[in-house]
Amino acid sequence: MITFNGKYFLASMVLLAVLIGIALFVKDSFVRPFLGDELVVVWMYAFLAAFLLVRPLMLSLFVLVFAYCVEIGQYFRLVEVVGLQNNKLASIVIGSTFDWLDLLAYTLGWGVIWVFQKQQVREV
Image (cartoon, rainbow, N blue to C red; front, top):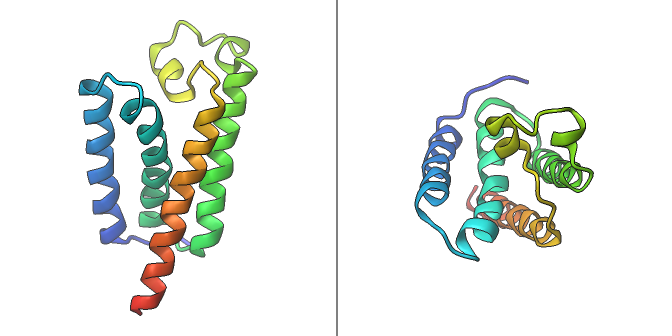
């Protein structure tokens, strides 16, 4: 069901600003590649939750599986297979480098969502 949740939308915009800041200004070996991947999963969840009325567990699992699929696409060099290796936007969005640690980061991001949702249930 389509809806609008301002709280999730605001959270997604804040997270997007943080992710853009990380991408533009952080050049390290932990925050950008690992914490950034965790936050991407949380951002995707918040953005979708702003517009979709779906059970939180289902939405969070969808986001996690989607992130895994993107990473698996990187393993199989999806950008090259579909001929988009020269398209900078496609290379950034889809990615081109597989890393097992990214799967861990996505899972930890899902864990952040799960803990947050459990906390929300307790407050109600």
